[in-house]
Image (cartoon, rainbow, N blue to C red; front, top):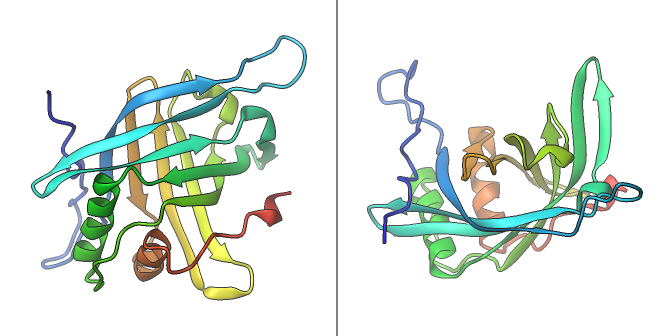
Length: 199
């Protein structure tokens, strides 16, 4: 079997000061994707993309599964010429590869822990500069929001870019201030994020 892409093959190091750590930006192969539902000539666009994101590291394979909400459930907006779409993306564990992904984050971020990854996270998401309807034709740049409305201490953001034409997925840090919270969400310490505000 051909190894999956090196998870850290596209780490950005340009412009870093001596001793400065780069963002933990990971690249994955998009495998086993499924497009459920249909794009109807009249009526709702029911297509929903799901798949597995898998990559290689020196410590073993890492990965996770994802599923986008159906296209018609994404709320399209345009502000000052920037198109966005708001909806939900579900992240699901695929077992040991997801546990190793969590361990990669713990090691990179210097966060202690040895438990398994949470089974499922349903996150609010925004697609930046595009539309959920174009996922078959172009790369989608999305940002996930992980938080409880009444607990700012849990707030975290992370980028999830899905490129079906290139069969790639990217998981990229938004900011170092979210590192501990991101680990907490992935290990199940925070429960489920709030998504009701999307409605």
